[in-house]
Image (tube, rainbow, N blue to C red; front, side):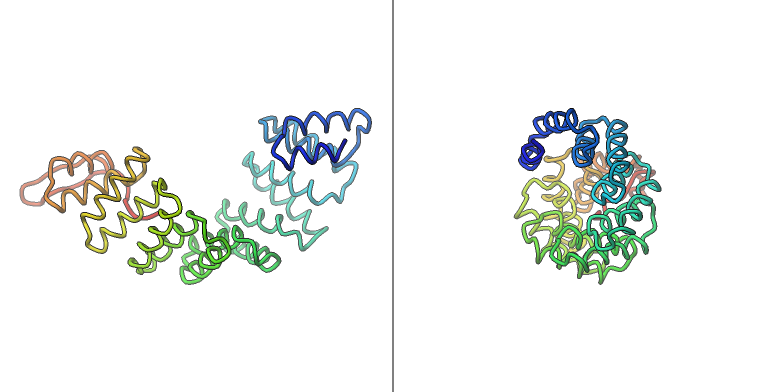
Length: 285
């Protein structure tokens, strides 16, 4: 019965799996695998406290159950209880130092806490253990970018893309790192590759617009910003950036309206020109 439950779980049928795990527990109330996986399913269906209790019961039965300790950490992470999540990842790694998911999950939590150097170290350990995991390279790259280590971030994003060329988010993220490094033409090419894979990727349209604006292609930037707003009308930065491009092309009425919508209050002074109060930035992000 446990194997049938696991088969349902692997095939994306959590309801059937949950029913079978419960049947296992009727005959074996302390079965650690059934307790653990029923706990995970409970959390995923919004019953997180019940999930925590079930996973903890599994660990009372089998204290060294690393997968359960890792998932206990994941539940705490999802609940925002980050220090408890870290404690469980460390507990798992003390038992199994080469457990790749724990290193990766620890990196995510440390990054959320702003402890970027520690997060980078955790991601590097995960990547060393699983060099073929594109997602780990991407997570490392994101932490490196946040730390301002752009050359290393670009290298890691490039590795992620080499492993998974069809990832539109990876191409977009590489573009952002390239743009932050001043390599705007290469950034535009990366955004275009992202859009070739995922044509309705609103953020990539916005970022391409920003790059084209920096390159002086105002008509191209306008088209990209308009496409971003068609797909996602409330997209941060796109309306104000489109307004700026329209103003630069002399399209004052629509430009002023969009800048005010996107960036805040716009005022016009005959001598000083357009001024903006409040609002955000149209930079790639």
